[in-house]
Amino acid sequence: MKSNLNLPAVVIAGKKNVGKSSIFNKLVGFRRSLVADYEGLTRDPVISDINLEGKNIRIVDLPGYFVDPADDIEKSMNDALKHWIAMASLVIFVIDGRSNITEEDEEVADIIRKSGKECLLIVNKAEGEAYKKNLDEIYSISMGDPIFVSAEHNIGFETLIDAVLKRIPDSGQNITETTVRVSIVGRPNVGKSSLLNALINESLSIVTDIPGTTRDTIDASFNYKGREILFIDTAGLRRRSHVEKGTVESFSGARTIRAIMNSDISLLVVDASEKISDQDKKIASMILKYSKAPIVVLNKWDIAKAGILDEAQKALFFISYSPFVPLSAAEKWNIDDLMKEIVDVYDGYTSNVQTSKIANATSRFSAEHSISSKLKLFYATQTGTSPPTISVFVNFPELFDDSMKRSYENFLRKQIDNFAKTPLKITVRARRES
Image (cartoon, rainbow, N blue to C red):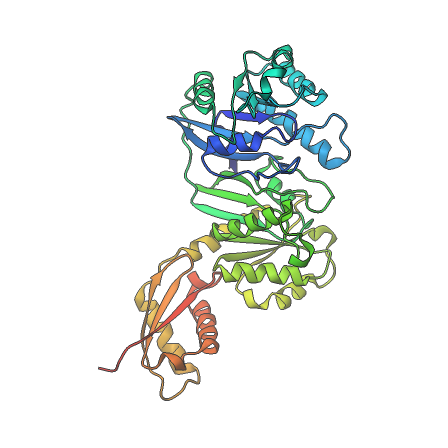
């Protein structure tokens, strides 16, 4: 598996709450990083590959820097900042024009200087006159001539973009279009970020033993046996009653739902050392609601509780077609089996099956199942993919009820290999007898 991380990286660094994410969103062109009136919103590096006026680059929004990190999360955020600066082709160093230069600003500047990387000093929040009283301090930091911008008021971005383009050579690298989109979802602290790191063999997501470390969605893509696969690591979803409206966690929950909606496959990560929870079931129901292909990942298999596989299959019976993959992200055990399942499930999810096969299976279903003598199944055909959508033409659609739909789905999965591991959408249409 080769990670697609070879585009020139432009990293946005600075202390917390200076507007790095707002600048990132302006450059990327849409709201990708979380932005609100809270300090330290970005915990993980947020990455986006973009074409900036003809040049393909990777933009990285880094977490804030802490002079005295209070816990493992803040230490990991500092490590992430140093790691990405070391990998950068260009550093955009952001300071707050309305505030005095702080110890955090000076330490970040020192890290950049020691790295030897080319740097642009960006003074954000420069829409009024307030920044002018700090000009002496801004120049005293000795990071070159500053560019004054206001992300909130869209001021100074033409100058910023021109400066970036002058400093980034044309790499000749293309932005590979992703063919398979895979979201990684689950409740907090089940090992989603550890799984992403194990999959791509890069420490893109911060991993600690503190629940709820990831608040943004984290995207990383790589090529696996000729397939470009995008993984989206999401914040853990807690029960709504435990999430305060308007908080950072509520932002992330909405983004996690959007990640599920925008994916082909959702990896539902559960903790194999614990029993299946109601929240695990609710997240599985959400994947089902949006017609995404689930794969249940039983993480922490090295410390799994006895009988957890049977328990999981019984608790998640409504996605029984899903593969259940035992795995240890920490030990990087069984990763290849998971990758094979992702490819297999995607192939089924996007497959087109010959009408003759569906017709034959439908005919056998009609013959082998107890259905009303009034109901006639004329024919069935596939009318869509992602998920496979089967249109069944009958004389009385009301007689082909939800229970019969489920029986028909299960029968198709047994009869047609392509459908064995994917959700199916059954539409029933009326047709009069000729």
